[in-house]
Image (cartoon, rainbow, N blue to C red; front, side, top):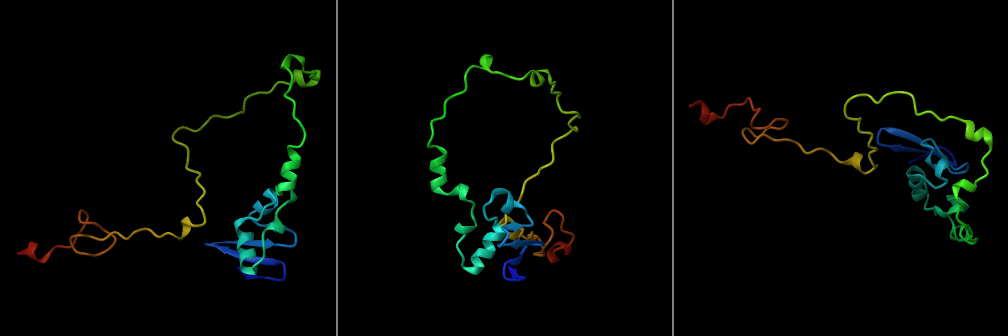
Length: 148
């Protein structure tokens, strides 16, 4: 986390860079604006500043507003046959989406977590010669007692 000015910070996440503005409650990843909750980048800034995150959350997430949501009784909808639907809505035809799915297995669109990027792969070592980056099956080095 690098402080640009009083409210704007630059957060380096691996090789990507995000800009967090605490005053406007924005981040270039756009999760801060969309969810109205601090994104991981904003939380990193708030942790460095030793500031609580509660005042950067929307009022919609407070306990008071949650209880107000369920304060009134909600009646179920009546039968669909009794609905008063406008004719222009009934006449509108909704077609299925245009296009075909490409053949084959779909691509993996997994989003890696922030912690997963820090893990390193295990090095492969050859049990024949002890060198790295190959195994015994693909080893091209000859043992000394194999030559005799």
